[in-house]
Image (cartoon, rainbow, N blue to C red; front, side, top):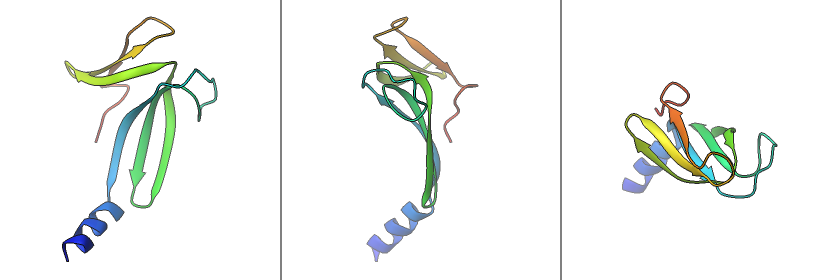
Length: 86
Protein backbone atom coordinates (compact mmCIF):
# COMPACT_ATOMS: atom_id res chain seq x y z
CA UNK A 1 0.00 0.00 0.00
CA UNK A 2 2.84 2.38 0.82
CA UNK A 3 4.37 1.71 -2.61
CA UNK A 4 1.16 2.87 -4.33
CA UNK A 5 1.21 6.12 -2.35
CA UNK A 6 4.83 6.78 -3.31
CA UNK A 7 4.12 6.02 -6.99
CA UNK A 8 1.14 8.41 -6.91
CA UNK A 9 3.32 11.16 -5.40
CA UNK A 10 5.94 10.68 -8.11
CA UNK A 11 3.35 10.72 -10.90
CA UNK A 12 1.85 14.01 -9.70
CA UNK A 13 5.05 15.87 -8.82
CA UNK A 14 5.47 19.43 -10.10
CA UNK A 15 8.98 20.83 -9.50
CA UNK A 16 11.80 22.85 -11.04
CA UNK A 17 15.40 22.01 -10.26
CA UNK A 18 18.90 22.87 -11.42
CA UNK A 19 21.54 20.33 -12.38
CA UNK A 20 25.12 20.51 -13.60
CA UNK A 21 26.73 18.83 -16.60
CA UNK A 22 30.54 18.97 -16.47
CA UNK A 23 31.01 17.83 -20.08
CA UNK A 24 32.90 19.98 -22.59
CA UNK A 25 31.07 23.08 -23.78
CA UNK A 26 28.59 22.78 -26.61
CA UNK A 27 26.67 25.80 -27.79
CA UNK A 28 23.63 23.63 -28.41
CA UNK A 29 20.80 24.68 -26.09
CA UNK A 30 20.11 21.01 -25.29
CA UNK A 31 23.56 19.40 -24.94
CA UNK A 32 27.03 19.82 -23.48
CA UNK A 33 28.50 21.22 -20.30
CA UNK A 34 26.63 23.81 -18.31
CA UNK A 35 23.89 24.51 -15.83
CA UNK A 36 20.45 23.22 -16.77
CA UNK A 37 16.95 23.78 -15.43
CA UNK A 38 14.67 20.74 -15.34
CA UNK A 39 10.92 21.29 -15.05
CA UNK A 40 8.80 18.26 -14.15
CA UNK A 41 5.00 18.33 -14.16
CA UNK A 42 3.48 14.88 -13.65
CA UNK A 43 4.72 12.67 -16.49
CA UNK A 44 5.86 15.62 -18.62
CA UNK A 45 9.26 17.25 -18.37
CA UNK A 46 11.44 19.77 -20.17
CA UNK A 47 14.96 21.05 -19.73
CA UNK A 48 16.89 24.09 -20.89
CA UNK A 49 20.47 25.19 -20.62
CA UNK A 50 20.81 28.26 -18.40
CA UNK A 51 24.61 28.66 -18.68
CA UNK A 52 27.00 26.98 -21.12
CA UNK A 53 30.45 25.87 -19.85
CA UNK A 54 32.36 23.27 -17.86
CA UNK A 55 30.46 23.76 -14.61
CA UNK A 56 30.85 21.89 -11.34
CA UNK A 57 29.61 21.97 -7.75
CA UNK A 58 26.33 23.88 -7.65
CA UNK A 59 25.48 25.11 -4.12
CA UNK A 60 22.98 27.50 -2.57
CA UNK A 61 24.70 30.48 -0.92
CA UNK A 62 23.19 33.75 0.40
CA UNK A 63 19.91 33.37 -1.54
CA UNK A 64 21.83 32.66 -4.77
CA UNK A 65 23.19 29.57 -6.48
CA UNK A 66 26.96 29.37 -7.05
CA UNK A 67 28.88 27.02 -9.36
CA UNK A 68 32.45 26.72 -10.59
CA UNK A 69 33.05 27.28 -14.31
CA UNK A 70 36.52 26.07 -15.33
CA UNK A 71 36.44 27.78 -18.75
CA UNK A 72 35.37 31.35 -18.06
CA UNK A 73 35.42 33.44 -14.95
CA UNK A 74 35.94 30.57 -12.54
CA UNK A 75 32.72 31.29 -10.66
CA UNK A 76 29.09 31.61 -11.77
CA UNK A 77 26.47 33.18 -9.53
CA UNK A 78 22.81 32.66 -10.42
CA UNK A 79 20.56 35.11 -8.63
CA UNK A 80 17.15 34.13 -7.39
CA UNK A 81 15.63 36.37 -10.06
CA UNK A 82 17.23 34.23 -12.81
CA UNK A 83 16.22 30.96 -11.18
CA UNK A 84 13.70 30.36 -8.45
CA UNK A 85 13.26 26.77 -7.28
CA UNK A 86 9.72 25.68 -6.53
